[in-house]
Amino acid sequence: MNQQKNPAPYLLFSIFLIAVDQASKLLVHKYMEPGFSGQIPLIGNWFKLHYVLNPGMAFGMQLGHEYGKLFLTLFRLVAMLAIGWYLVYLARSGAPKGLLWALSMILAGAVGNVIDSTFYGVFLDNAPYGSPTPWFHGQVIDMIFVDFWEGFVPDWVPIWGGQYYSTPIFNIADSCIFLGVCSILIFQGSFHASSAHHDEQESDTETVEEIIGEDAIPENPETTSEITNVTTEPYPAEEIEAKTENSITSLPDPEEEEENKKENI
Image (cartoon, rainbow, N blue to C red; front, side, top):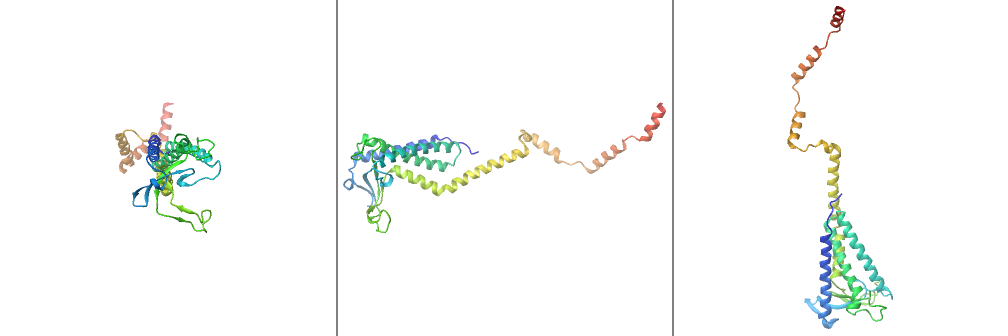
């Protein structure tokens, strides 16, 4: 069995990422104007800060159904709890550290967007017009814009064909989910290999203990050397022959025993 790990460092890492995500969103909301008028170039004309509200899923995608936003928020809540429980379970089961760090990033992203969807409609008053309630209908704040393509999608592309699109605008929570999932997909082989290697080493150790027995291993190393010397040094051949002859000659003669009995009678 793999050695258990303390889930606290991974949960604290998730909390740190959540704090960074929420701080960036609140700063953008307070100091930036939405849309192109408040856009701030960071690196050239392709990496920018662009304040936009996202009523749907990650990377600017949306659910068009009337109750799509409510369903999405509830789904995020369930996913957040499930990921948190699974992270603690894997840590206590001795999962590889890389897998645990990746899951902590996914957990941070899920929680970050859940906070937006659950509370921003009330505290930032950004719920879409006509929402049945501001609770669970808050819009997620996106601001990271990697602008390397925009234009019309060809008509032959299913669903999106003939429409105008640009590269998605996202936030730190989306980035955490994306990086966490990519890490698991790319490095899952090494995660399984390290876990299998650890299990194999423990299995070999248990097999040796089963064969020789724990009691057969003396605790004192000096005793071990003495036992080894006694059992590995053979008797000389001459000494063995002499002992064999003495044992044979020392056997009593049956005829002499009979005569002694008669004399005694």
